[in-house]
Image (tube, rainbow, N blue to C red):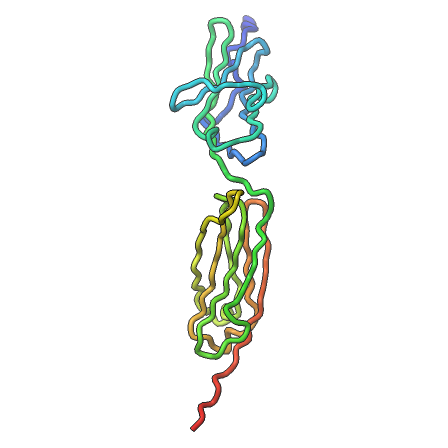
Length: 218
């Protein structure tokens, strides 16, 4: 059997995937693993649409032959379909495609604040319990509730909203409001709200007392 040529046929380390999805997180370095089989290969980074070569300045984006390209501080404009091109002599090959999805990654878990419309509610009245988080803009906050009416399978009704907060830094208010119509004795107890983002979760609680209607005077 004849020996194969030592010249690499595959300039990139083989991958079984046609494309790979990579999350870009705010201020978290992201690696596009365009690893080559020859240290003599020239490697460039390209955007699929619009077709263009991506500038690699060594600061915003750098290249290491053993790791690939690193985007040091990802921004929304880095998102899209990218791929690498390796050149060695007359040989030119493209890498796996990388689908970069930008995620506005929060700096910390949410810090929710819970407040009931009243700590003491008369039977038959309506109750509103709000859970509010003020945090970074475009960060998704998910709310879950535990409430006394769950033990009799009382349905959960909530209203959720997101709105910008004024000020010099771009921030937003995320809020979930638990609605309890025509309060009954079973609605007395502790209401727990859990707010969660990509960094973690935190729970807060408040207690509501239900009091009977005052007897009508004749």
